[in-house]
Image (cartoon, rainbow, N blue to C red; front, side):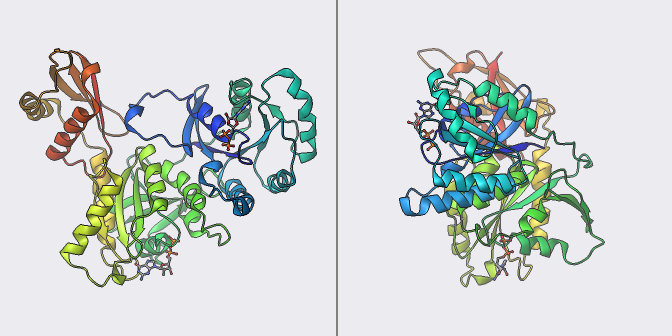
Length: 437
Ligand code: GDP
Ligand code: GDP
């Protein structure tokens, strides 16, 4: 269970520069980063063997002068509700503004650790200016230069020193964890109510390790799973829930702690930027996916044609990852609620799929022979053997080739598609690696 660090501060103080520096510390061990989109809002930082997530609040600000101060203020409030630690970034050359004083007050009242960071301390003489920051009442300013990296190592040491070590969850192994995620009003609480009903015998709350993270064990009707973070989903905050940033921050923990995400879309609204933000969080965390088009009761024309149009629109937005189930449901009338659970369970099993090596080679090698990787600079590329790597988070396949560096993304996608055509992996991301034979 990871920690979450939020970077807050005025525009141009260097939040995104710091974010980039922090998230670059992470080595791409399990995934070839090239294939995944890198956005500036959410990433992972690895330092001294510990990993935590970082959010740059600046990534969501609408750039319009009259709204921004109020909007960032709201984001700071959301950050204090959801994060484990806040980095309050100031520009050492710009001193302290009234807005900084306001934000400092919010941060002083919040019950989470805050590090005041004085950025752009590029050379020693600037350090005189840092004394001004004491009036924020947040202790010693921590001087860094996000641009050159000076001081950022010490800052990370301090972050790790302060971040609470999370105790291990006392969850049973092998029981899937489902998270219901989606933008405000998509119907998350409604569908959870539909799953659980009022029957107290079905569920047990397990006190989570953080303030609000709670796993609920559901064990009935042939289903046995944990629902992640239902408390967070039920708790609403009317002041801030219209912000995109809100639904993202609300989703991070639930997604990180799950195996399968049930992404709720609102049939009356289609798929919008907020939904895509959450989808990207799911992807970045390598989680499995079931899409629920909720409020289907409100759609009058339920013809096959309309269904197809919906499905195509959704898959088009989420391409290249398109192999996931889409269920048209209604949390209100409970139409297909059972089907949602059934599908989530199947998707979990797909995530755990183990494909025997001989079968894998038997099917894949002839396909590869029929469509070999294109030769590069006259060099002939031969894939000789494929195996699934044991004990990985998601199904991971290694193809052994004479010249792995010449096997490009489109061909890897071809291999992935062929694997998906031949085995049931719907809903699960998979990794395809090419290695030296
Ligand atoms: P944000 O709006 O808070 O995300 O700020 P950015 O990260 O976009 O940085 C704003 C500007 O400040 C950019 O031109 C950066 O290159 C510059 N900047 C960021 N960090 C530093 C630093 O440590 N020193 C100096 N001199 N410039 C910096
Ligand atoms: P959340 O913010 O994602 O937890 O959404 P809620 O579960 O609170 O639902 C938001 C609103 O949509 C409420 O007024 C629900 O009654 C309504 N709602 C949720 N699911 C459905 C549905 O399937 N059909 C209809 N007609 N309304 C729904």
